[in-house]
Image (tube, rainbow, N blue to C red; front, side, top):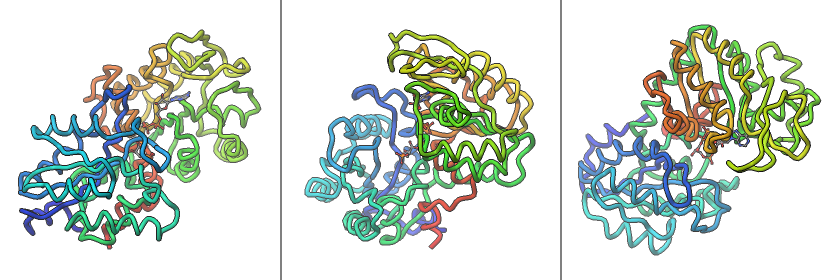
Length: 395
Ligand SMILES: Nc1ncnc2c1ncn2[C@@H]1O[C@H](COP(=O)(O)OP(=O)(O)O)[C@@H](O)[C@H]1O
Ligand SMILES: O=C(OP(=O)(O)O)[C@H](O)COP(=O)(O)O
C-alpha cells in the first residue's frame, strides 16, 4: 500500500491532490458542536499544502437523500477547516459540477478547496458500480492523485472512498494508517476480559456486526438505541423506542446462542417526547410505557456495566448509551465513559458521536488509550471484515 509519505517524496508541488476526509461532525443548526474530525483531518491536508499541492478535499455530512439540501451543507466545516489551517478554504457550490471545476482551476499551489457534500449526488452511495464509477471519473478529472484519509468512512463502498481510488494513483493518509495501527492491537491478542460496549442509533448497521464480533469478545454490553431490539426479542414492550423490527428474530437467536455474553439494561430512562423538556421517568425494562421512548440507560444498568468494565483487560466502546446531547439523557453515557476511563484497561472509543460525548461530558481524554474517529469503520475492522476503502489501496 502506498502512503502519504510516498506521495510526498514523489513530489506534489503544483499537483492537484484529492483528499477524502471524514468531516462528518455533529451540528446544532449551523454550529459545529464537536470539531474532532476536522482537527483529525488537518495534519494530512497541511502536509500536502505545505508541500505545494493544490488540495481538493471531498467529504460527506450526515445522510442527505442524494440531492442538495442546505441543512447538510459543508459551509460550517469549510470555515472551521480554514480556521484550523490558518488559511481560507474555498467551498465549491456543487460536488463535481461547474463550481467544483472552477474552484479547483482557481487553486494556487499550497491552497485548499472543499467540494460540497458528496452525498448531494445520489451516485456517491449508489449500489450500482457503473453509477458510482461515473461519478468517480468526475472526481478523477479534478485531481492527479488521491489520498484516502477519512478513516470513519473506509467501511463504505462509495464513489469518493472506493471507486475513485481505482482511477487515480491512490495513497493511504496519515489518519487511516494511524487508526489501523492502533486497532490492530485489538485484533491480535487483546488482554482479557475483552469487553465491547455498543450503543448509538445506527442500529441496523451495528446489529449486523454483533454476530461476527461475539466469538471474539468475552462480554458485550448493549445500550443506546441498540438495546430495544434485544429487549423486544425478550418479549418486552419498548413503547416508541428505536426498534429494528426485522432484526428481532436475529436478536432472539443471538441471545439463545450467546446470551451469557450479552448484557442488556435492567432499567431505562423513558420520556414522552424526544426533547430536553419532556416528562421523564426511570423504570425497569419490563415497565416501559406505550408511546414513550427509551432515551438512556438507567442507574442500575450503569452500576452493573461499570462493575463489568472494572474487571476488563481490553475495552472497545462505540455508540452513546443515550441521547447524551440532551441533559436528561446524558447520565448513562457519562457513567459508562467514566467507568471505562477509570478501568485501567486498554481502551478504545470509536465513532463521531461517542468521541464527541467524551469531550462534551468533560471526561478526561487521557483515560482512554485511543479515541478513534470511526465507529462503524472500527467495528468492521475488529469484526475482521474487509474495509473497501483500505483494501482498494492495496491494489
Ligand atoms: N435510546 C436512544 N434513542 C435514540 N437515539 C439514541 C439513543 N441512544 C443514543 N442515541 C443517539 O445515537 C447517536 C449516535 O449514534 P451513532 O452514530 O451510532 O454513534 P457513533 O457516531 O459514536 O458511531 C447520538 O446522536 C445519540 O443521541
Ligand atoms: O459518522 C460516521 O460513522 P460512525 O457514526 O460509525 O462513527 C461516518 O462519517 C460514516 O457515516 P455513515 O455511517 O453515514 O456512512
